[in-house]
Length: 325
Image (cartoon, helix red, strand yellow):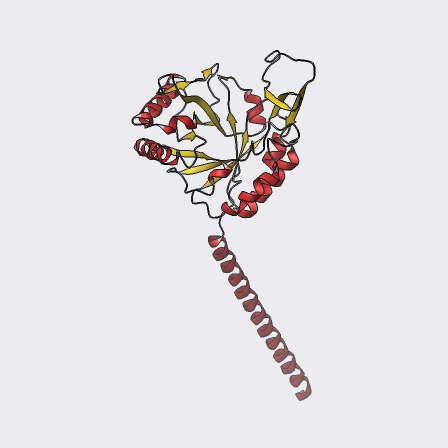
């Protein structure tokens, strides 16, 4: 009987220890799970959400008509539309030129950013009142053609050191006028301008095309050659404006008379073809575009959050590759 009772007690004691061990294991597991969940929550709070990649394009023509299906297929959400140029008239005064004609209203699915190209020569004289005239004309055109309220306006000018002061004063006045209406101002930035102080603007768009000399018959990549971009990469990281980049996807047809450049051929019979003339086609090479795009992102990891293609055409060959890489 004593032996039997002793056996029972040992069994009970063993079960108690097993139960205690199991309970301890469960408690440990629950605490570990809770810590893991808390760590995941805290980590998630500190992780920055990945930015949405924006696909945009320039429209650089005097007549606006687009293939909406093409825009939808490539998920293009912004169009930078050149509204008009500003040039000098015979009296040296600034005046609008080559105003776009809207054959259709831009799709409601895209944001329109009006662009005004100002010839650099305009900035060699005083431009008092020009900012107000440009802003008013943009607003009038936008309203006339049923375009949605603007969020941004862009000024394109190949300013130099000699015209910088006038251009910056113009941009400062534009920014003041637009900010009252809640509209941002952007400026195009060319490679040679990167070494200078940024213009007064809310953001810049780096124009990564026409980097070479297309008047040289031996230049195979005048539209974009990474070797032309490379010397300017050192300015990208420290440039004190938010930056996006515009990449080329277009073709030039160039006429040469012997080795002498005659001009860009926009349509047939624009120039007489003489014996010995040569017509050369230059494309923006995809490998040059992608190499440049990658190099810029290495210097500034947010520069391709918006990828802009210059310019929108239905027969563009590499839009999707440029957007997706």
